[in-house]
Length: 380
Ligand code: KG4
Ligand code: ZN
Image (cartoon, rainbow, N blue to C red; front, side):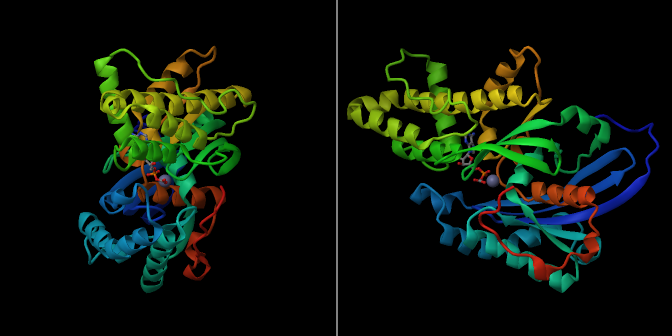
């Protein structure tokens, strides 16, 4: 985003937001400074701590909700202490924070409740306003986040070049195509009918014995095959719903096809063909995601494609999307988040709260903790 050094900068409002995220298996707290100026949004991440529970859930091959909740309860005060130490120090923090933001949904109910209760207690004891925000909108907006202590100036004019857009939000729990008219104006145009894309990576990795989380494990194994470039010996896996006329997805059949193909493979051969299976699974998932996203972007005649969510850490997905966009007659602008903001983090929750307040022109000082609740199935 361009510098505005020579522009007249009139400050409309400034906020320091403390955000809390516990919807799945990361306990995260962050602090963001954000301003609305006459022609720009000013965005500056100040502190961020993400405590991952991967080791706890790994033996089960997926997130166990009650274990996640137990770990969040244990980690929240520790993560909070670390964020305070990394930002304004314990004596100043209360005075500095203008607003508390918390993920209210969607997510795992026992996990969400820990963050929501922590945030409400903090809001009550500090006498601060609090806002509950949507986890998936956070993923969608994470493209606007710069690195810690760096400043991003987002001109309002730039937004007109970005929107309308199609956002592909792909995580462990969700796979959605969203028509984004502007920040805050969303229409879900397609979603998965069964497993999410991240879930397919996770279950696929479990079948192949590659561990949890499956996305990075499959990507690493697939890369081995790309480097070896040996003869392709396995059968092609399906690309589910790639030619369907709608924007929905289905990944559970792909997982089953992988399972059958793997079971049919001679046990002695499996070790040698493992990287080919991982490669084929990654190719299949990314083919479907890219094809459907481009189909939606062309049909809705948007200006841009936006990626968000844990699966968009996948390099193959980014590359394939970029190459396919470049082949279009009218290429779309392409935005994806910094790697650190692809998986769950509280910084995106802070930013979402800021945009919510600045767009809806809410008097945020009236936002009260009594109205905040967790909603595991909150739809955007
Ligand atoms: O957004 P996220 O952190 O949590 C949810 O909201 O679900 O996404 C986690 C998902 C997991 O399924 C994980 O396997 C997947 O993102 N993931 C990846 C990669 N890194 C994480 N999938 C493919 N390739 C990756 N590099
Ligand atoms: Zn997520």
